[in-house]
Each structure stands twice: as C-alpha cells, then as structure tokens.
Image 1 (cartoon, one colour):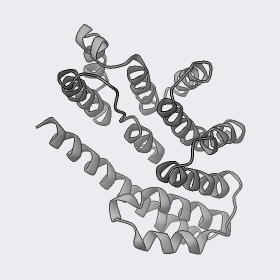
Image 2: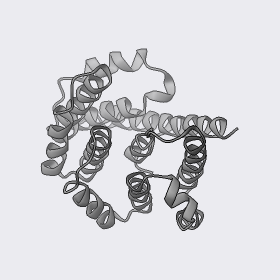
Image 3: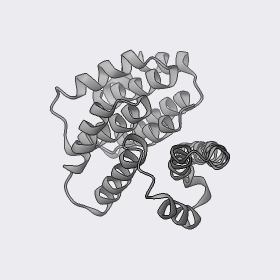
Image 4: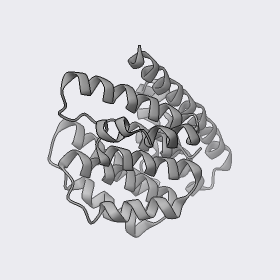
Length: 217
C-alpha cells in the first residue's frame, strides 16, 4: 500500500456539531466504516453506506471522502481524480478545505503530478496561522521540496529529526530520506530507509487500528 494512503485515511477524522447521542452513534459508525477500509473490506463498506441510518448520521462530505479513500486503496485513480475535481468546485468549510488540500497534495505528489501538487501546496499555505496548520505547512513544503523539486539539501535535517520521533511516526520522514538518497545516487541507503519507512507505516497502521478498536469499546 502506498504510504500516503494511510496518511489520507488518518486525516479523514473530523468532528461536527451533533447531539451527544448522534455524535456517539456517528463516531461508532464512522469507526466501523474506516475499519472496513483499513482492512480492504470493500463489500462490507458498500453495504454500510446503503444503510439509511448511516446516510442520515454521517455528513455527506465525510461519506464522499471515505469513498475517495476507497478508490485510492483499490487503485482506481481516475475515480479519485473525479472526486478531487468535484471538491475544487464546492463551497467547503475551513476544516474540509484543509482535509481536501492535504489529501490532494499527498495524492498528486505520489502521482508525480507537479502542477496539481503545487496547487494543493498553495491551498495549504493559505490556511490560517495556527500551531497545527503551521506544522502541516512546514511538512508539506519540505515534502514538495524533496520529492517534486528533488532538493537534497535537507538530508541532515531529516536524519536528525528522525532520531527524535516516535518510532511509529517515522514512516513519512524516512520516505523523504530514502528519496534524497535516491536523488544522490546512494542506492544502498535509499533501500535501507525505504524498508524502514514501510516497516513504520505498518506500525502506524496498527497503532491507528488499535485506537479505533479502543474507541468502539
């Protein structure tokens, strides 16, 4: 599975203003739908979406965004692009715009589409200043610099950062390190960090699955 897919799924988690009961039921259903996606259980996912209670409880944007992730996980890139194009024409609130921008950036970077990746990078940089947004902006700009512009100047910075990160969170950072080593022509180091990135992406997946299971109890 592409490392970015996990990031996109994690970023799906949003909170909306419902009653306590509805919010509880919505989160319970949302966790079940997300778990089906994480496990690749697409038939179960589709059956849940046909449930009228699901349609009434979970906002349309969230359902459509989960469908987007389903297409990404199935490798149906054309359908994913259709949804991203639709989102660009809609009025979205700030959190939704942020969610779409980050997911779209990750997707188009993975696709090597420099023009569309730059569009979403610019959208992210337009987000209001906050601790969370500033962190996202920094990470997105570094990723674009390394992956799309093939800049190798950040290698030591990323190596130092990797040492201070929790192990299950190192996957993306190690992907960037691997990319820099590839650009430098160091195949051995590139492969080493690619393997570490895959390992820690699996750890992140397991960590998120455990969190979802705890939330369902």
